Length: 455
Image 1 (cartoon, rainbow, N blue to C red):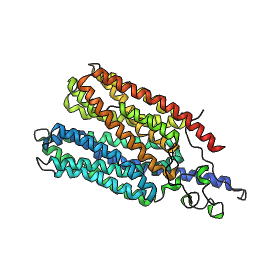
Image 2 (cartoon, rainbow, N blue to C red):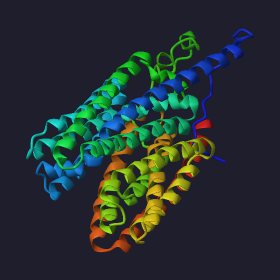
Image 3 (cartoon, one colour):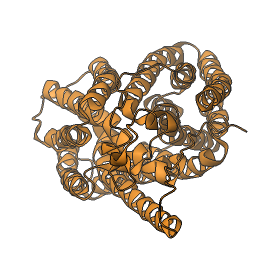
């Protein structure tokens, strides 16, 4: 069975001494430990980063309203910010591949993203325009760093299992997404809601603590692992581009030997094109949690102060689902994504049709399963389809397509929410199930591409 995973042939030498196998094994084991440590370190960076911006998102809508922004302005800025946050990734991904300055883009993007959050504490009353500008800046920062970061993680993930590598990242990432809103929930309980604007400003100021930790850990990671690209062995296709001489011995750093003549121009493989159709269909039908919160509030089944806890619960499910399906991906390939998508397709009828708190909670849990797959398996699949020399561009295209489809889909689902809930459920479920069909087709095409490459 084909699992959409790249097989890597290790270079060998007939003139190696007799103890070379054990030495090579020890070297590979050391590389795997180093790769795992790098993934965990970047995961901890994501943990504190998500504490910062996901904590902010749990109170951002009401804070913007208190600064004087209308509902229309909040909706526009939220949508525009997300559109910028995704569409600009194709540019930053292309630049990352051309310049190979992965760390520079990651540090710049993270700095913009996490500094924008505590800066919201400085917004005066009626300063909604400046506040909205910071919201957009935070999303732009994410666009700058995301393709480069995913590319570095994919290099290390090749040593520990691509699915598991991204799953570990997502677990720590979503742990931060849980802790951030939970932290602000506690601050709200302590401070009270009599002076809500002051409470929110304090909350944003305190989010400066995980923001500072994020930047500090990122600089430490850059010093400890200046060249994460060395974790990944070249494919047979990339080995064919390297000169076959003594300079390409196993003692030579990989980025100086096998990638001596890498292809940096992006080629749209048919499997990747079909995969893009699948993930765009999934994104189009996957409702944003803002819409879910709006519906939950309309049902009056939950107290208002519990909304951030519902989101935190969804993030907790997301984290566990990422670990489960990430490990499953390394065993069965894209079939893991087909299973997770089939499960997430059940959330729209459970959330939007019944008037039941229990069923809504179940639907939110299934929504979390879909999010976990989105942030782990979908990224892992890109790493197995796209060669490393052009992978940041691939991630940029993937995330831009996903974001644009999610933006358009959210717009349509929001309209259907106001007009016809049944139509909303039908559109959401149908597009997610259609994505499964294209995932299957992608597996078949990628299998044929791999067979042609090995001939």
